[in-house]
Image (cartoon, rainbow, N blue to C red; front, side):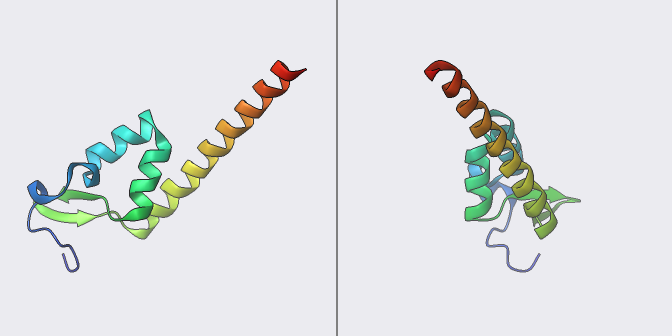
Length: 84
C-alpha cells in the first residue's frame, strides 16, 4: 500500500500494531487514543500491510471521547459525594 513506511508487519513497532491498539483500548483507552492520534495503526489483510483508515480513526475518536467524558463525569460525581 502506498505511503506505508514498513515492508512487513514484523517491522511495525509493537505499539502501532492492531492487536496492541485494541488491547490498550480495553485496558486504558486514553493511551490507545494517543497512539491513534499520533500516527498510524497497522494490520494485515490478505497478506497486505494496511493502516487504519479515516473512518476507523473517527469512530475510535468519538467512542474514546465518550469514554473520557463518562470517566470525568463519574469522578466529579464521586468528588461531590465525598466533599458534601
